[in-house]
Image (cartoon, rainbow, N blue to C red; front, side, top):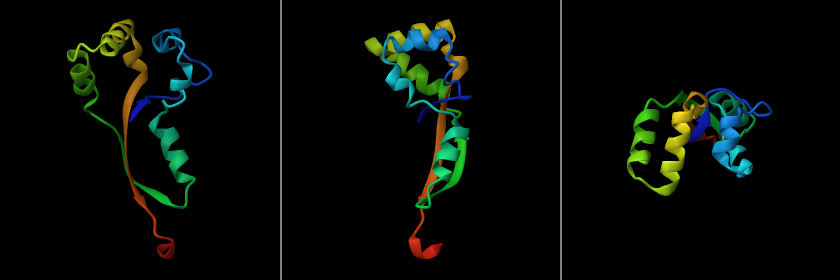
Amino acid sequence: MPGLKEEIHGNEPEVILEWLDGEESEYDLFHSRKWWLNHMGQSDKFEVVMDLDLESFDAAWNDWFLSKHEFALHDEKFFEKGIRQYLSIVGLVIRKVHPLCR
């Protein structure tokens, strides 16, 4: 899932706010791997089997930019302005925990 390298909520760089262009509610969907691990760790219904920042970050964004979709062009402009340093693609493998296995 799209994410952040580190939590920066409450201290958002101007370039991030400019990138979102008034859609700050979407920013609430972006969190770091550490945040997701803590969030998922609070559930007794799931367990995290593996977590990582995906190495396909560059390839995924480059494919998106090559689509030339209007949103992709917007994102590419902001990658050139430096948002890349804040973003990540967070990977989590989770398993549903059966209540009788606890």
